[in-house]
Image (cartoon, rainbow, N blue to C red; front, side):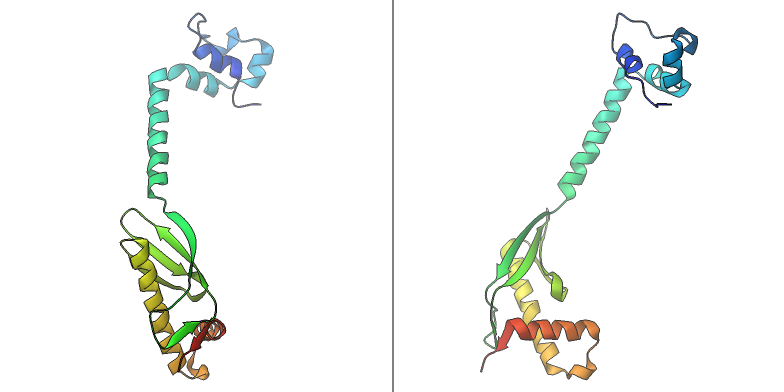
Length: 162
């Protein structure tokens, strides 16, 4: 049994056709494909009610789209410290929200935030320098699995300057 019959739906919007008063007015084949629930839903609800629901759905979708951040990929080519130098650029993700921007290095689980892209990336660079200072000052056996992995990754992409 199908849940929807196009002929019934179409008759709802055809002003010259009168809606059936009961299922007995349908042919046997129509009765097999239509449940009383569908007939009630199609004929009990007015066009205005359906349009109101569609407008509510449209507004909800608009709010979801408006809330969703704009996401871009970028690279960091340098660090703001004389102590470290990048061997090659680091991939970052930038999420631009309405009131703030967040720059992220997903592999290292660090981020920087600011009111614009420049501030967020600059904050992320300083977070990276702080992480480097911290990880390089600790012996390997004092680090957990995550920090060990970060340290190994950083040793591949960053070199310490003299």
